[in-house]
Image 1 (cartoon, rainbow, N blue to C red):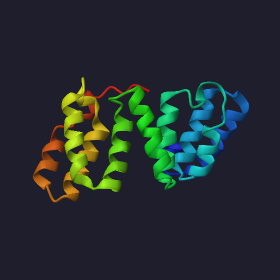
Image 2 (cartoon, rainbow, N blue to C red; image 1 turned 60 degrees about the vertical axis):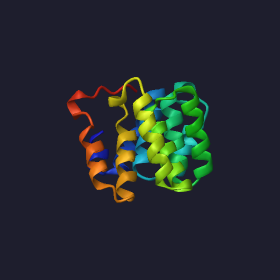
Image 3 (cartoon, rainbow, N blue to C red; image 1 turned 135 degrees about the vertical axis):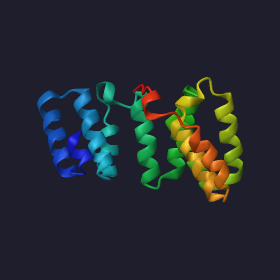
Length: 168
């Protein structure tokens, strides 16, 4: 929403909270959770996310991805790793889960083994062009290993923004 784009997070949260109070819809709840996340109010976002109500509950794949990201940003790395792994068991080529799991494994075991794992994941994926976050993580890991030319090559393989179709 415009407030978030302008980094006016307090206004975005207030608007989303009002929408939730007035409508009570799952969409409004998801909007508030997103605004809290964007504002860095992670504990609040996680608490609201974990309230079991309707589709905005953790039954939704997008909600579980967001939960894993929040846990990671809160420094609850083991919980985030477990959440990402569960997502990958359900959806082995889920971009957000692949990227997060890779970041966590690279922190725990270093970038080198993860670079090989990501290259294999991109090769094995049915639609590797959709793995944008995964490619960005791979490029970052390559840079961290001073493999600049390889990182540039990975980055150049990213699809153009207009070519992407996002599915929520």
